[in-house]
Image (cartoon, rainbow, N blue to C red; front, side, top):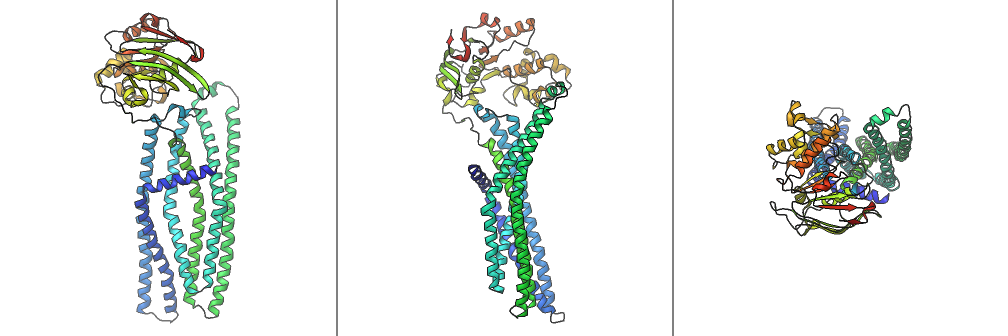
Length: 553
């Protein structure tokens, strides 16, 4: 937990460094405002002394104008600070949205092991907490610290006794931070963890709505939510206890200081060591300092929430990305020849594939056969550059896949995997991913050969029809046709297919097979299928046995 605490503080420091020029400007304004705030009690002191004279004077009028102007100028400085903070908040949101969007497609697939990516995307909402927290931290905390600092200096000029008061105040702040601040952050992180577990379960119930509907009158959803909510409430109560301790210390200190200063200040006036004006000014300064201390301690909760949110966002940011700086480039127009050399793949200590070797020359068609669990899908993903190989190598035109820019390689591939779904966007976006290099005529060509022409004609918006997430309210067949159109639209050099004919009736399956294997198409094919029709049209057949530990040609 201590490691997470340090990590959270480093994240906050890194975030603030991005806008250090703006933050320095806020601090400069805060210093100026703090000095002006201290001028107010001094002005009031002088006004009180003049009022004691019992007559209106020019000096009194000028002081009233100056004090009023100082208050107005402080307000103007605060408005300028708010404007700067708003700019910082907007930049935080913008950076966060682009950071999440950039990272998700580039995170290594093994980083998503035991993680549900949509639930991880919910961490983006912590950006809003960070925005609000940064606003409080930048506006309230510097102002409070400077107010305390200037106030203590000013008080020490009135009487040496106030130096003791200043030392007690510094000691209080030190003990609050020393003994409760880190513990407060730990309990805040624990609270957030349980909060996300509740949110994830609600998301899971919503995702599996049909399953829960047909389950009858079972109480699983409520029972599990009860357990998760109970744990969250326990964690929140632990966090509240830390906050309560901090507030108790604050209240005790305020009571003691207020009573002590009123009594001692009164004695100093009676002993003529202070005049009435100084006494009034000192009490105003003390009230300002107490308000600043209260703001500082209450601000700890905002700091906890901000640090916790940064840590939660870090669960995505910390995940390792695929490398993008390959040293070798592929010829954009030349054919692709693949060599799979002694390739193995493991997940943790479990071997999925071992010692797999074969070639896929340009224009060749290779079939992967084997029972479920033999590693066929894993092999397709390795060849597609989706997963990382654990041993051996894959060569593309005699260049190791590890030395290539993966996205340059992937754009030469057309991949159809059964576990894919359409995403929220137009039909055109689902097919081309916004690639301007795919002309519209190729889109309609892909739509025709994927069997989507009738569907597109029936839509008022045509290829600009909006598709819901995961192809919601589309038939499974239409969803798979969209994915097939996506795979062939850019006329790839290699087609990587998993059971592409499985969902079609026999007549259409034969038509699709004929289309895939038409010599007019220059692509190579690597297909994983149990359908025997592929054996008749493929140049090679790779048979994988259970767990992928053996192979034969």
